[in-house]
Length: 326
Image (cartoon, rainbow, N blue to C red):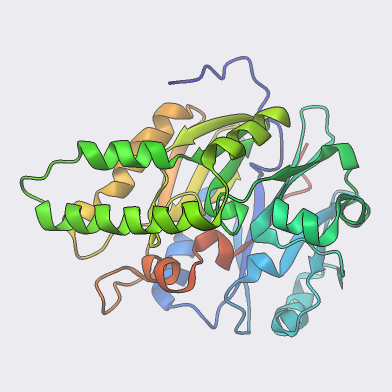
C-alpha cells in the first residue's frame, strides 16, 4: 500500500541532514572508501576517517546535540581509543559514559514539536534502564520507546525515515517476493537464495521477537511503520542503512549492495529500490555500497554481513549538521 505523505511534516533528525560520515579507515578496502567518498560528494556531506582498527564504530561512538553543536559520546572501551585521539583534529568535544547505548540498537530523533525521542532495543533497556538513558542523552523518559528485538540490533531490521515514519523489514513480504521469482532461468541461484533465507529466518524466529510485536510497539509509540521486503538472509540486508535528508526535504537512502557473481541475486537490490521509492515518495535517491567482490563470490559488504553480522550502518557513524537541523 502506498501512503499519502503530502500532509505530513518530515522534520526530524532520524532522517538527518548529514555533516559527515565517520569511520576508521584501516579495516576497509580502497574500493569501499572510494564508493563512500563518491556518494558523499553527490550528497554534499564529508567523509571523515581516523586511523585505527575499530570496524563496528556505530556501536561505540554516537554524536549527540549540545547547544546545536556535535558532542561525541563514546562507549567505555579501548577499541575507540585511536578514533577519539585522531578525531581531535575535528575539534569535537567527547566523553565516555557508563550509560552509553549501543548505536546499532538505538535511534535518536525529534518530533515535529522539536522534542527528542529514542527507539531502544529491549536488551538495552533491560541493561541500562530508561532513567539512566534519559539523563545521559537529555531525553524525557516518556519519549524513550522500548522496541522488541526482531534481530540482535534495531539497525538490522528497521530504519527511521523522518518522524513519524519507520521502515521495517517484513519476513512475510520477503517470502512473497521469493515465491514470485522465476525459476526457469535462475533455478540454482533461486534455490540457494530461498534456502539461505529460510535457514536464516528459522534461526531468527527461534532467538528473537516476532515482526508483529515490533509493529505493535512502534504504533503504540506513535510511529507509522512502513513494511518492506528488506532482509533476504544473513548476507543481504537493505535495512542496515544511512539516510541523508537533503535541503529539498527529500531523503537519500544508502545501504548494502547485493551485487555479486550471480546476475540473478545482483538484481535484488533494484527490486528493493523500486519498492522503496514506491512506498516512500520522498525518497528519490538510493545508493548501494558493495566494495570489491570477495573470493567466495560475494561483495565486500555481503561478506561482512554474512560472516561477521554487520553492514554499512554498523561500520559508520553519522554526524548531523546541527547548524541547519531544525
